[in-house]
Length: 300
Picture 1 (cartoon, one colour):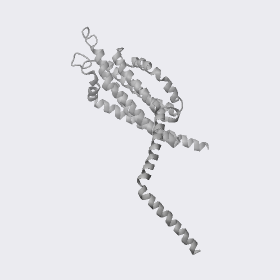
Picture 2 (picture 1 turned 90 degrees about the vertical axis):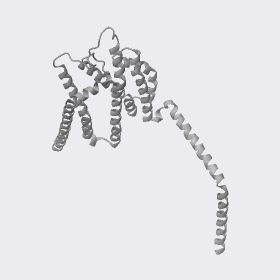
Picture 3 (picture 1 turned 45 degrees about the vertical axis):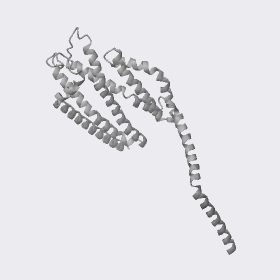
Picture 4 (picture 1 turned 60 degrees about the vertical axis):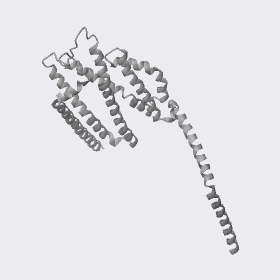
């Protein structure tokens, strides 16, 4: 018994080692690729600034001999981590898959792609919408008094932080569905908290955004409110019998009731329309059956 347990533990450790090896390989490939294409990646990351980081053609600056090297190494490490995360997640999933029931297996297959899609959507929102608006306000505020001179490290830290936290914020629907599906927090409880969402959204937006102006805070608060509403819908969809999201349950019952009436009316109309054919046919069949009975009795 001990030998069997020891052999199973050794096999598990070997499988774990190989998955760690593949994660390190993915990290190395991602980091080296980021380093090799660093110029193109830096140009892509500087697009939201719209050439307003400094008076030197709008390019960011660095103030120390090793600052640019440090920024490049930091970028390569983040690129490696970005490449290693999917491999690590898949490795962990394949490691624990044999011990999982089929229901949990199907749930995870849907959960991970939805989580990744929501996070990427949040990062894209930060890149294409939030960063240009925030930087446009920050860098132009007090332009008659001082000239912006932004270092590359400050810009990258701000960008990565906003993209990460907005990616986390966009996970609200997935988190609400998971809480409702596992019955940790019910849909009714989430629905009762809806009245506190607008105030909480503006407080959270004030924490996330680097500015305190109403425009940028509204730009983040409105998606949070909409994401919570979407989360309410998916939480209701997890257990439709436990709530009534925007009267959808009542509307569904009404639609089913109307559909039953339509089906019954259609049957009556069909019977009336086909009566010239079905009634004589029915009469002929009844007469034929009666004649058949008479013939069988005579033969007996």
